[in-house]
Image (cartoon, rainbow over all chains, first blue to last red; front, side, top):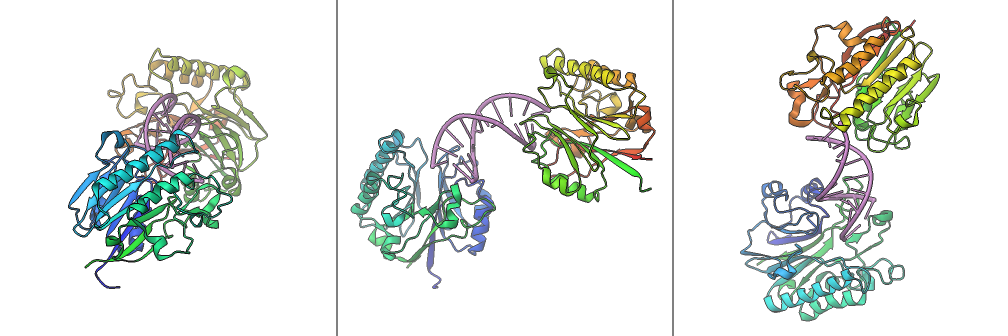
Length: 266
Length: 266
DNA sequence: GTCTGTACCG
DNA sequence: CGGTACAGAC
């Protein structure tokens, strides 16, 4: 590996506090090789974020916390040039689901999409509206020509290849046509699903239900993505899911596994 | 020590489940030298009692559990001749606070008295009524001539010697005249406070508040007792509080320490 | 299945 | 301060 390799991870941790020791052990296991980590589902306020252990490992943490639910943080070895919490519209910023950090080489949108609900339900509608708003935010804030990555838990499995059993999961939340279409509109704008781009045929999940020990039968979904503009994706050398923090019993893991992207930085 | 030494312990564990590993470590630390253990505040139903580890260590457990609150169990190497749960009156047996086991050599009443409340309050009245009922139960069920021990968490500090600071604790729950009088009536009936009998001047607490790290300043109270009839007490060779399971930080200990009585059994 | 709040009791 | 129960979310 050349020394100018940069690694970005995205990890829905399902509580940064309950999972702290596991996350730190994971960082150590990886020999602290991640340059940027995008966390989702902090389930903690800014004040409750365990800042010290991350600072001790050399990370600056851009945090947008919330009590009990949601919450995102982007922790990076280099301090970002700017941080924006949310969409910048009061109406859509009641939930902490999005944090944007800019770096000299690229811009990073770290998001936690709503889970949604049954088709036609209130939560289903909210998810679609949220995605529509995300699209407009990206359209208004960025250009497909700039190096941009949109990364996080999208709570959508884009195709049937991204779920363990399309038959069993027909109509399941995260696989509905409207949800897939909402993400696809982001791709149409100019973002590339880098995992699928690099591995067109590979089935690789990032989430497994707690119930029934789904991780042990690999019955999961691909819900976590890095979508990048071509200017960003040309930097990428590889990407993969790191199962280390997921395939274990104790301490109790998150239901998600981290997704790692490696790039060269000139 | 002669091999016919018998050891009885009483221990308010403040949840038998949350404290299981600590209790088992404690038994091991003591080289499994306890013949009878009286537990209070199981905070678990009969079905939730962790029976196996105690059975594996050779104990028969007479359990009277309750969800979330109260709950008592008497675990003994020899199976008791009989077990009675509660007072035997529906009205007074809604809470699991008392279990009586009979053995060939003596009878054992294991109790968890109500904590009570501010003087004049509902809970204060309930505690006094409960003690009145306990007195009548003992009067009606036993004779001061028989070998009988009444052991457990009485939630009363009998005298000012039994609290760390009579000045600071003036009027504190557990030190009120009516509460002390309630316990004294048991002594008047024919029971001996064996610790005080053997150590008339010694200040030794069995409970320390969680708040403020009271254990580290020995700011406690003596709330746990073994009261015995003379026929029982004549068997006793020594008694003491075992601080091992209390003076520690992790795993979080109970706020009580076990009280141990040693006897000779002919 | 797992987590966080809130509530209640010690 | 520390335990359990319950509701709500995912």
